[in-house]
Image 1: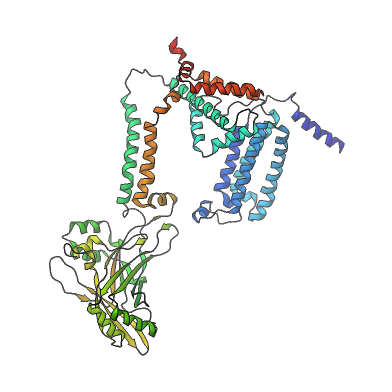
Image 2 (image 1 turned 180 degrees about the horizontal axis):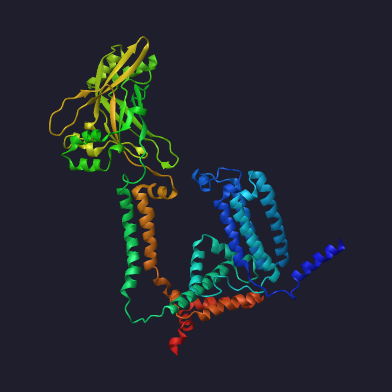
Length: 601
């Protein structure tokens, strides 16, 4: 026992003793990359870590507007471990790192080989996602062990992106700044766990200056690799490649929304309605008539039927242009039964109140509503297309007296109500199923409202024993612009629906089409246009700080500030930082300090 304790004590003594240890190195960057890899594996392979064995990824939960609590817990734990590891590195707390490594090894192996198989009913050997996560974590353990063996460096100046000045460093920093909150988190953690005399605001300012000067140094190094005489004109190939690509992008952004919406009915997925319902009410009383067309009573047209439907509009270019956007499979014919599917169950007091309104009210409103429903499909984006028409009959309208007589007992009589509903309707993915103005406008006389071209109906009240129900018959005028045609009374209602295609429920399609043409223009054209305008015209105020010919002296001043901070010279750190701020406040001194030494000689 004592022998084992002695060996353990010797092992830790060797790790913590500087003598004989390898040269201290900074291995934090590869450890961070390994941790981020584990983080991403958890996000995109959550189904392998949770109790859901459906095999879907986390996007399936987001599409249902749900976030699993287990996923959030795992991500928070992983995030906290990354912060804890960063704190140990900044404080150079090697003993804490050793115990943190031991704790992680024990925790990961218990979770991966005991708890997770019990929770998911899947062995580790059969869980590919867990294998990838464990492999990434093993790489982290190896790099972390190498960090413990070599020890933390006494001075850590800058970071992996500013340790050298190349094109790769420039791109890495630009990618680093694109990630939200990453720069702020790094600066804040550095300020918390590093000894410094600077306030948190000054700390952020210093890091911004140092990063900006480092990236200017990278840009100057890149430009030196592509030395070109400033007096020579730009090559045509370079102008057409760079300028041509930018020109195509701008033209695309300007016209893409209009092209997308002009193709709204030629792209997407065809999803025809499977049900068409209509309803007729008077002044909010019990509905008079309700009926539905479904299954075989609502279907798309054949080519011959669609040609017959187009024939009356052969002389109208506008109507032909509208119908050319639809194929015969995009137009449905709904044949609705003329007999109401429900009995009229109005109470005697309500019946008397309705008769009183028809006799005495100056205006009585009829409401005719229609609804189109598609078959449910979770992969497509649509809802219910519906609309209604309110028709007001004044006190002198003859239909009112006929209705009064029918309600008082004159059964099997009919009353004609004009312009009740459009026989040609547009069926969008959701929203308002309006009349097709391009076609019905040809029916109406010049200067008259399009409502005058709506179809009339014959309304009758039927009674058998104690049961009452209403019947609606549509009057088809058989419109033709050339010859006079006779009206035909149909046994029910026939409606033609011009069905627009629907789009996928994917995030990108919803983003592009969800707000309509105005939303698309505001979100894409104006936003991106503002961004490009800032790129093209926002450089003048920053010329003084971006166009610095030689940044070596300023960069060296930043490195000196970091060096004296690592040495614990807080007063000197504050003094040098004050000089750096004064330098940027003095244009003459900044010009003198950043002058190109090579051109002076």
